[in-house]
Length: 145
Length: 145
DNA sequence: ATTAAATCGGATAAAAATATCCGATTTAGC
DNA sequence: GCTAAATCGGATATTTTTATCCGATTTAAT
Ligand code: FES
Ligand code: FES
Image (cartoon, rainbow over all chains, first blue to last red; front, side, top):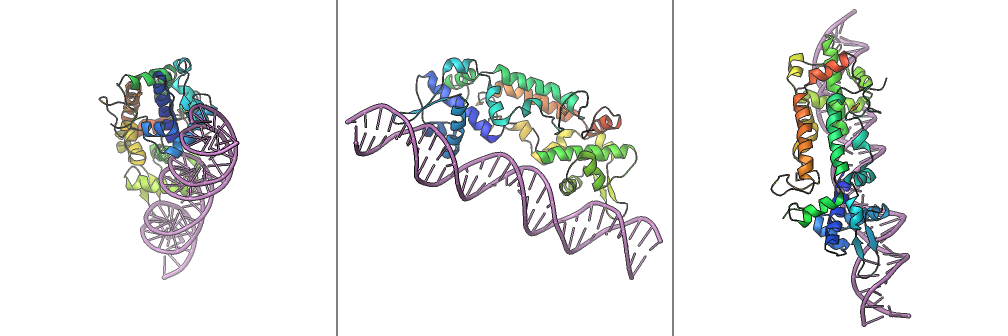
């Protein structure tokens, strides 16, 4: 569904936002441990998240990463997915035709497009704050116990 | 969604089955042209389709590929997807947790699992014959016009 | 038997995705 | 100012996926 990089990115934002709920800034090591991801790879993805303005970074001693919770409240998961995997989940033909449209559809289009529509609607209607709250409340996890 | 290899596999079966609707056996070149896929790559995938018994092959002059239409009628698309991409579309956690279950879910599980369920149900309820008929009737295409 | 058309199968090549490394830069605290 | 802790960014390495190549085998037609 998502690329591995995108999965990591999503978990990283959720982890950082969850720490922000406690008013805490977190750092690379904590994030990598919190989502069970290689440190160096986590770092690379965090850089993209900072560039894309999803998380805030502070250099130097006591530096680290945090989020603006108001922003997380109005940030649909879809925005993050778009940055890492492009819009192809939302628009690409499931069989790889150059364009997906109902006038010249692939044989699966009619049955697939509605499901994809629901998926997109989940991604658009789910904000990063809600996902972080799932972790905060203990109802969901980001790594095996 | 699917791997490229799986997309090609699906289109190949559809193409071969569509020719079988005309009572015709088709060959590698025609298939590759019919789905706009590199000949050598198409060949490799066809071999797996033969091994998995989705298509029948005949060697030698006038050889080629064909399908058993009765088999296509009772062959859900899901069976092909499973061979090429495993069961991970149906079972894998969308965020990559080792196990997807509702007792220890990832933050997306609750919203994602129902959509995935619908997707699986489409893949299970769509048979290869129906997809081939979509091409036969001209309502759908396998490559750009 | 010979030939030509076709699939088969193993080895290999190329490209993309995933992951690591390390020196440069920034900054809080002393 | 110095030091230690942290992110930054570019280069590189590894792994997986995608794609190709080519000789071996099979077979219909002559
Ligand atoms: S044309 Fe294939 S999914 Fe729309
Ligand atoms: S636990 Fe993540 S999708 Fe089910």
